[in-house]
Image (cartoon, helix red, strand yellow):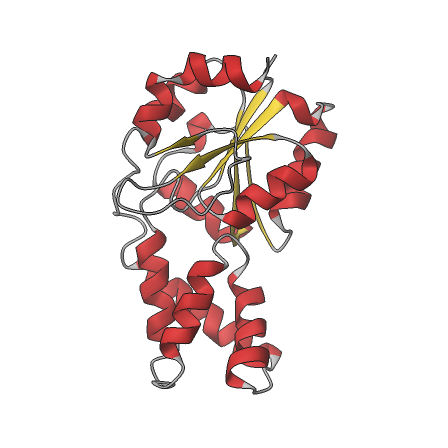
Length: 219
């Protein structure tokens, strides 16, 4: 039986992926020859901590050193830019209804690459805390967060499912051994391999098909 549901945040609960892409474009606008490469890297590494992205961008793309103070400045500027829209952006279709419905049946956890204190603030301001048994963010990677949930609640990997929208989500679930459901917008190509157990365009579809999905996941 399924014991719990874990969900990524950006692109699974909130339609906030494009906001964060714009934030990276804004942060590196003074590198016009590199900004498109930086944006492609950001999108290809969706789901990992922004600070880890900053380190890789400076090392592998800009070929510059990154001080701790500069990384902190970038992080603060990123948060300020994203904060203009993150508190008002729409939910992924069906996400709020999914949380309301499923949280009455199973424990629900958020597992995100967003810094944990910032994530708690967004969850509080979007009034989502009532549906969540736990909110987990960076700096720990998602693999470690999933393992922490399993350890804290004495669950087996086969007893939880992770809903994510990126390959880092899929890889974290695969590494830990938990079930995975991918969210891919209807206008986008799936990044997931054929081994992905289930892919849906939004959480309304997931709610509509939930019984069938669970039956296939835990058979």
